[in-house]
Length: 106
Image (cartoon, rainbow, N blue to C red; front, side, top):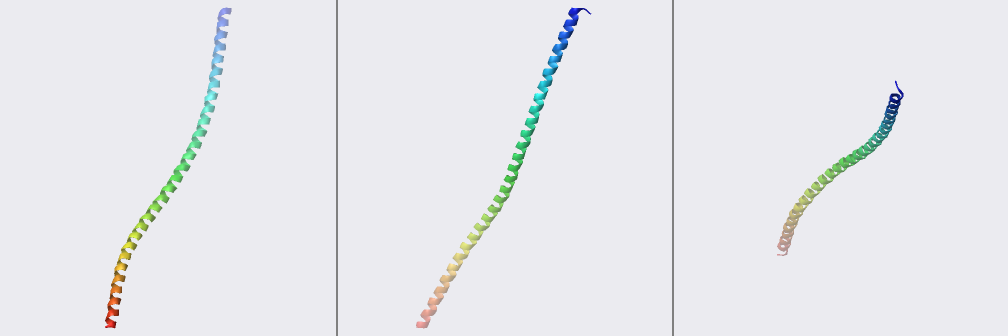
């Protein structure tokens, strides 16, 4: 093997070694980036799951409040109907009392 071939081979070997070292450094950097992104993803997912849980709780509360409101409206409607019935009954009783009082004075 002559000197120029040996020099070229050493230069190719040095370039290959340098290229390998740069690729290894890049791989380490990318691996670190992946770990960081995974941690961010886990944190984001935990926040998302907490929000989803709170949403479910709020939806259950909304359903309960909606049902309570429906019942209250129904009760109010029934109370208003009953109020009108009682007014009519009171008026009828007052008329009867008045008639009885007039009947006693005669």
